[in-house]
Structures are given as C-alpha cells and as structure tokens.
Amino acid sequence: CRYDEGNTLLFTCPFHGWSYDTDGRLVGVPEYQAAYHAELDKATWGLPEARIANFYGSIWANWDPQAPAFEDTLGGYAPFVRHIFDGDDGRPGGVEVLGGVHKWRMPSNWKFPAMSFNGDAAHGSITHRSINVAAIGPQGERGGGDRHGISFPRERGELVLPELGHGGHFTIHELDEPYVETWQTLPEAEEYFRRAYETRIQRLRENGEKRIEGGAGVFPNFSTGGAPRTVVVWNPAGVQYTECWRFYLVDSQAPTSVKDALRRWQMRYSGPVGMTESDDMENWNYASAASKGTIARRYPYNFQMGIGHDRPHEWLPGRVSQVRAEGAQRARFSRWLELMQASSWDEIYPKGAPRG
Image (cartoon, rainbow, N blue to C red):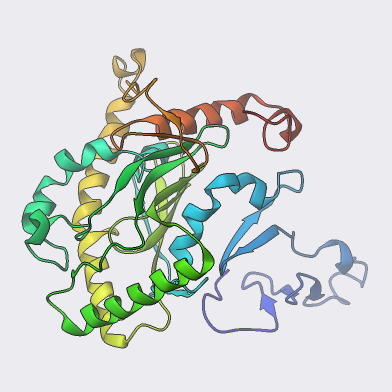
C-alpha cells in the first residue's frame, strides 16, 4: 500500500487503473463497456481481506482464515508486547511512529535476526563491547557507558513460551524503586521522563499491576526492544536475504525536543546505519554466508546454553531461566519445525489439542 500517510476514499492501481473502495470492493474498471463488454463480474474481483486485530493501536494481520485468533497466538506473552505501545506515563496505546517505517535488505537468512534479537544475551558483551566503550547512550559514561541506559533491576531473566515459540528477556522492578536520572545531557528530557515515570508508577499502583520491562520476540519474526523503543519485522526476501521493517516509537504527547532527542539516539543506536545494529548485521551476514559452506552444513549449531535449568515462575507465564540462555532459540526452532511438519492448524496448538 503506497498510502502511508493521509487518507483516501479510493485505491487505484497505477498499472491498469482498477479502483477499489475502502472496503476492498472493485468499483471502477477502465473501458468496462468497450473492452470487457460489461461482462466482468466486479463483485468477484475485489481485494482479498485479511483478518486483523487492533492491539493497543498496532495492527496485526493474517491472510489465513483457518489460523488461530491473534489473542490465542500471542497467548501469555501479551503483556510483554503491550507495554511497548504504552505511553511513557503508562497510557495504553499512547505512542506514535517516528518518521514512518525504515526498510532495508541484508544478505542474511531471516532466522538469524529473528532468533538473535532479544533472544541472545550472550553476544552483547562481545559483539557490542566497542559501543559501550563509546558511551553512545544519553547517560554518557555513567553506568559503564551501557547503551541501554541506567537501571537497578531486581529480577532479570529469559522468559519463554515453548508451546508458542515466543521468547525474550524481562526485568521485574519494584514500584518503590526511585526514578534514575539518565538524560543528563538534556535537562528538559530528564524532567519529562521523571514526570512520566511518577505518573506511570501511580497508574500501576491504582491498577494493581506489576512493573515488567524487557524485549519480546514474537514467533516467528517480530521483535521489540533495544535501547530506543522500537519494533521490527524480519521479512524473508529469499533464502539468504532479509528485508527489515523497523518502526521507532515515541510518546505521542512528548515535547518536540524530547522526540528529537530520541530520534538522534535511535539513529546512533539501530537501523541500517546505527552503530549497534551494524555490529549485529555484520555477524548475521557472515554467519549466513558461512553456513552455506560444504563442511559447515555437515555440523549442527550448538544451542545448549541453559538447557535443563529453566523453571516455572511464581506468576509469570511459560518458563524462566537466567538471562544468558538459549531457551528462546530452542523454542522458536521447535515451533518452526512443528509448523513445517503439520498439515493443518488443527494438528497443533493453539488451535489443536492444548499443550502443557
């Protein structure tokens, strides 16, 4: 769809001029009488309709009418996806996309970024060491220059829903945890985030909710997280090509100066020219190329980190383990294999028999 902004009452194909209304019905055909002799049945040539779900302002679509409902597909992972769309003060669906969607391609199999982004904590201290040393975050060199900002987590780990293939990292904070100054380089932003934090904590208390933060990897190819708020879809564009669609999110009510500061941080951090993602893409691209080798194809990758050491949590869904683990990768590949081997949705969870 080329109408990324604004609104329209009609969609017209630039090739042959067929026109559709906003319900997808074919309403206009050039030379309908002269070329088609009025014999074209417009009612049967409308646009295909996807099943959609509006999840706190984000639109999710599925072209398969037999697939499970979106809520069932997301399952217990919903709270970890929802918070990415909340405003800084905790308002549900309070964000907007900054600058539209950024798209680029890289010579990597899509499974590398899909299983790595927010599912692979072990690579950070190696791959991104130079970024932390450069102290690109808004706090400068405080906290060792960690690009994610400064925080005092109480409980951290990896959270996996094996039966659905979702996996990522979480941090549980106490509601009495004080605000941590992070934007020393921009006092206006510091004051804005302080006020938003206080409002969010009050909102959580009133609703009886926990404060959970982190990144989510939604099976098969949707990821959230990073230091700037972002969501990304890793679209297969061939066996060895991935087309990345990244959306940068900011609070719709934030001052212009704060939005500009976040935009500059996002440019430094991620995307096709971001320092952090450049590190990642170099590894993904080389790993994809190396995996094609004759010898490399004879040997399996090792994904045993943390295996056998996951456990149920007191109130979180799924299974939890230490931060540096590969339960998310194992869950995604197991789910992928399950879908490849199933002949219909009725054979697999959540539409088929429930799984423990």
